[in-house]
Image (cartoon, rainbow, N blue to C red; front, side, top):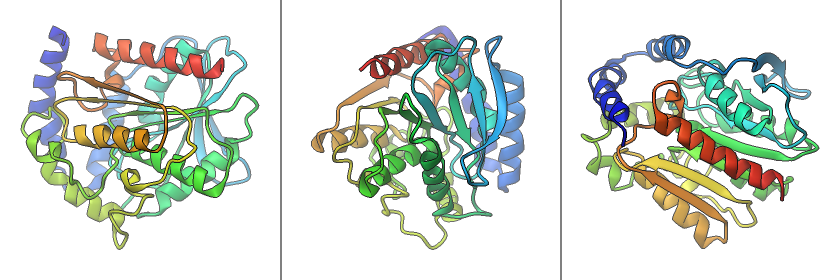
Length: 299
């Protein structure tokens, strides 16, 4: 782990983790995330962003187009934020860096957030987004981080269950795959996690699930069926409270015959690729993922 990563983890622990722990309303977290994105998350030069509507739906999205895009798959990316904050705007810079590395366009849907729109609004919007792009000539690659990573995996399971065209592959940064929070790392890494306060998870789950079941596969893809799914790429940090969400997800996918790449990094914070301007590890992860995506598009 680099010196920058160690310093950043210390800073996150003293600032961001406390902000998340103390926020009383989702609006506070939404404003804070938007400000952080403007200050710290910057796209590479030449990448363009367009506001679009997906298909015949009213679902808004942001399209990310790199310089000199090539003919190939479309990346459909679902942002994180515990289902209550985050937006295409907070994650578009990270996707711009991935788009620049792959020369592929990306689309980030603005799915509905809780508590205003509780479960199953988010998975419904994710499915709407996929239906709108699933016939893209070069195919589709799904992606997401944290809650958005769980949403991407839940969508992958729905795609198989509905018999829709399969994506070429799915990638997730630090995915939230188990809304029952039954993984051992949830308690074991509570102090070590530089960013996520474990005690706030139940609050988030209550706002999101409302009357839904935590073990519903659309909320917790750890309990879903993935038979017939394409390759999946997962990564998480070994000090995250969600470490076991990734490890157990990888194991379940493998037992169902899915080709899985699972990378566990030492000491890195939750969804560290967002911090591409600060961390060499973030840039390395994005470059490694770009290579994986490029290999899929050439199959």
